[in-house]
Length: 264
Image (cartoon, rainbow, N blue to C red; front, top):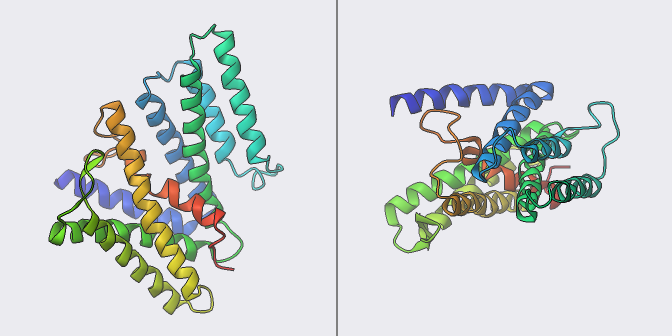
């Protein structure tokens, strides 16, 4: 427990500093998390990092993650990037005479999109032209508030299981407690920064952070159950892997962009 607390504090402090600095500092942090997270995903699916399928998946993940405009190049269409990656993966099934299966190719495409665009969305929001740091902090605080609210509400009054076949410790009461605390935190930001975040926008951000964030957690839990593993990796002692720590983020941040919930 002591080692877990120490490693958590150090990692948390480094994360906060790099997030506040933004720019290429935050990019370097996200690039590291993206590479490690994709390696975890590949290994969870029984593919070694020496296999060509793994390297194609890693390249596809980077294709979706990299901020091409900030690198001085035109941003390719996301649909075009996905199609190219799909074509390459399907071609590998032919070249290997189905040694690489269609199912295996599909899993790598899914992972590249899940990890690559998930972390790209975090970079895009943090380095946006308008209130990037504020929006990023608000989103993280709302996600963490949902986690804290769900945990303590579940411990205190949780009786009805939310989804026992996937995550036996989660309760409906805990889930609702997470939503409430996430909304409270989001509304606090609206009251502190009324010229930047409207109450309506704050409510929507709080709901997305809580509901989608909890689904992100359940998605990772369900996947680990299918693969018969406890953690996606072991990046920090006692904290599991990148996908364990970032499962909510990978869902919430893309949705904030797609739903146009960023402060104007």
